[in-house]
Every structure is written in C-alpha cells, then in structure tokens.
Length: 174
Image 1 (cartoon, one colour):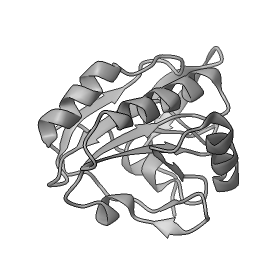
Image 2 (cartoon, rainbow, N blue to C red):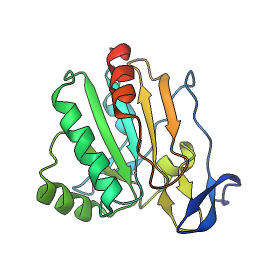
Image 3 (cartoon, rainbow, N blue to C red):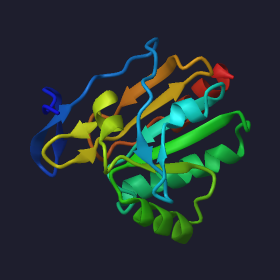
Image 4 (cartoon, rainbow, N blue to C red):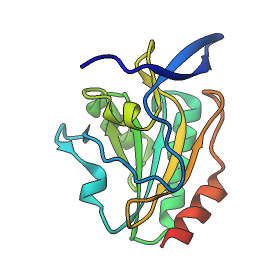
C-alpha cells in the first residue's frame, strides 16, 4: 500500500511533523476502521456499535500525562452518559500496554483500541503523524446513523479537547 500524502503538519517536540490521512468534518459519514482490542482481537468498532452514539478520541500514547488525563476524564464522563453512548480511545500503544495502563489507572468505562497494526484509524481520520507513527490528538462524535456530528483536531499535541462541548454534542446526538 502506498504511503498517503501529507494533509498538514503538527508541532511535535519542537519539529513540524507531517499528518497523513483524510480530514473528517461534521456532516460526513464516519468511516469504519479495523483496530485491535486489548485482547488482540480485530474489531470494526463502528459496525459493532451501529445504532449507538460514539465518541472517538485519538491520543498519542496513554503513557503520557495529557493522554492519561484525557482518558481518565472521558472515563469519568462516561458514568454520566447513557448506555447508548460508547467512548473509544484510540492510540498506537500495543494492546497489552493499553490493558495494563487501564488496569493501573482504574479506567473501565472507555474502550481502548490499538491502531498499531493497521493504522487505519490514523489514515481514515487524518490523525497519523507520519514520521513518528503516532496519532495526533483529535475527537469525533458520531451519531446513531454513522454521521459525524462533531470533529475537532487539537492544534498542538499537548492541547486537550473541550470536554463539556464533546459531552454536549454526544447528548444532542442521542
């Protein structure tokens, strides 16, 4: 498979790094993607949860301060949301590292997925930092009908999403 062309750049540790993939916008149909669950099973998460509202958040690595804080925040937010909302946190971390981190952090309400094997999420959602093979920070709200209701790409690696707005958009999509 040919390397996708860069669609933009993001500042990472003082360097401008290329982002590849397709930028997602509200109103588009959310592309499903192949990812790996914590037990190494392959999943198509949107097909598996069709009919629910989905929050997709991408993070560079759960083992960083900002990513850990974001994942814990979405885990806490999940408690106040309907069972009809599923929150996925996608990173390039290996599945057993995700499982270990979630256990140690007490994260049990979000579903972590690894993009390490296929990088399909990164490419299909315009989140793959090409030279680092990490994901940029972004968040998407996908409605029951698979239409993207909200899409936000953080301008720098360290920026966090607008949590109240993401939760509001998920509730509106119910």
